[in-house]
Image 1 (cartoon, one colour):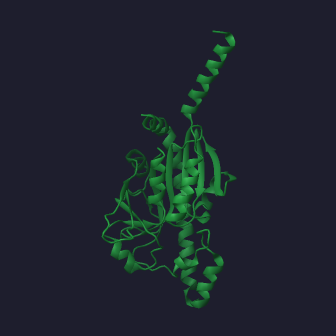
Image 2 (spheres, rainbow, N blue to C red):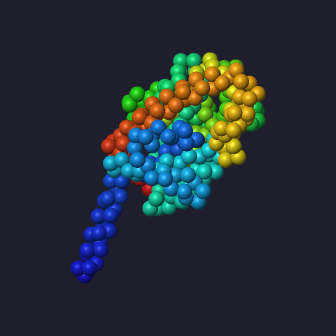
Image 3 (tube, rainbow, N blue to C red):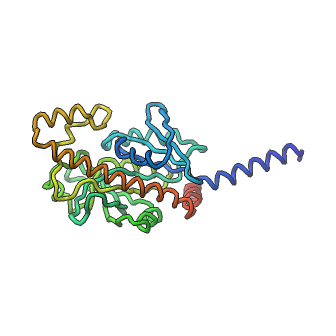
Length: 283
């Protein structure tokens, strides 16, 4: 073999060895407000890729990509589908973390609590249909719990914002918390071979009603519309103090989540989770 060929093989092998040391992690949020506190802790570079809103950064040997999916199952499934299609052999993700805020169904959970559910169920549109269930990756969840997340059993992904405490009570036998994205995010990520975990912060307790019906405040892009919130408040001005309290409560929970995620994502690589992920996908 020529010296040039030998050098080429050595370079190729070096690239492979380097790739083994790099871990690619995708973290999703429904809205930018959930992600904003993390941007204050770490510098992210914004990318607009084919309509997807992405932010990227590097933390040690971890390449972090953040995707803002929009609120709801349909929006998150569509965004994840596009995201994973662009992840070819050189841009695959080892791990997907569904993150952001969630509502409590269990009265023991309080705003600001960080949860790591073991399983996910999707809200059934037809009462007679059995619930589909997904499991997160056990080692990734174990890591989150070891760092202080609450080891919740189940999270329910709903088609609508659960605004009333009575609705939360009705679902409390199914799960301990509720969101609108995680089931579809984990389902899509697992279909593409990424190990998946859910790490979320509780924004509202099981006993509290949300101050307004946020289902009426979503834009066409499935983001919270300020103008629609103002319109809802114009119809019910006495709700303003409660809206401000809820906003402050949510910001505090998102800030706590950002600090948790910044440490947690780096722990994945130090524990060798990335290399194990690739071995599992290749097998």
